[in-house]
Image 1 (tube, helix red, strand yellow):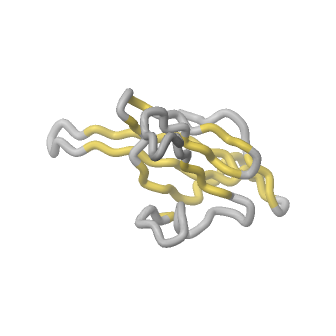
Image 2 (cartoon, one colour):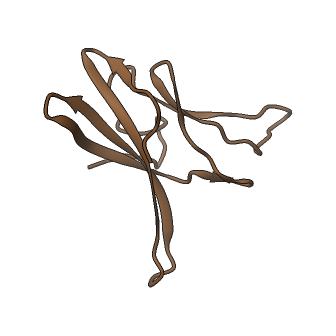
Length: 107
């Protein structure tokens, strides 16, 4: 499912999509943020971040805010604050979604 909008940084335009999969055979499921570069021939696939795009109420749909893809998780509250998760594309796709995290950019 495409994410509305794009991020333009350093002369490069990035587009994004949500990908979800469920395997009836293995019982495994998962989700990913797909990353594309907008080029002359069309969209060029760059890679993905494998993420859990669900919170306690179901699917969370990422949105673009400035130069980041933002994940509005609704039901997590820590000390009265509902934290958000975002991946900044200020300098292109970062190698990790959050520095030191296990969410890596894979091709």
